[in-house]
Length: 339
Image (tube, rainbow, N blue to C red):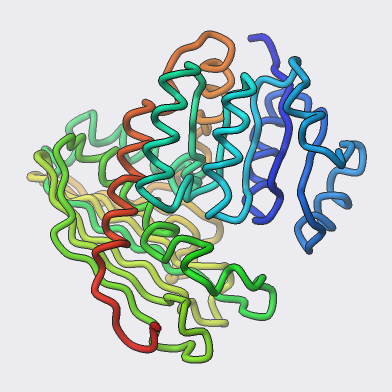
């Protein structure tokens, strides 16, 4: 497959490194990067990729017709405008989640994709960068747990409060915990249930541990129902210091004939590594090390850019995830120390 040239714009979150590494691993060339200001992420970018030039003016990258895909991890409230600018300049875009923070931004993104024919893709890393998710999907397609009835998605994160920029503590800037983190779990709910008609039944957010930051949410939950399944989502910033990684992310998929549980990043029993999968049905209960399953998102997205296809993620799915996340956030009951 023809390799493509990419650029990084809006370097405000560390997820930019996963986005970039995913494309570089395929042999793509990053011709340059841009960010409006300096921060800890831009410092690390310079150190990790000293051979990639930094551009002072983003227009120099936007006007470069060789660049086909732009990777974006800007401050969340700014991501939509930058993505729209890139699409209008003839570029496809891959964003860190959340891809946008308001319904108005989402509508403008949708209109721009229709007008330009460009790809707006969000790297939902808790699916696209987790091999066990694909193994679970394959097992379900093989009939191992029957029809999917419910997903339970848990997204705990470590706060690392001393390392966070000011915008991280203002939900007007980062979109709120449900718009931000829970977009991962909404994506997985839609992916595993195949639901098209979906409703947020109930949602709430809270600040129970950080009263000094009263525009920051450290807890959130969603009850979501679709025409092909139901789901519960819990996200938080409470990961204890003793855990050896940033969060014990889990996904349980309940079927009519069994269930699958993914311990994505750590096994508390003590097995080393990531991507621990547990399968229980009427014939067996077993453990699978799912860490060796190849990841496909980045390669498929590169193919979509080259061939103008939609194999990495359907455009309507991407937009639907953000619509539901924004609605859950907007209508959430706010508890605790939130202003």
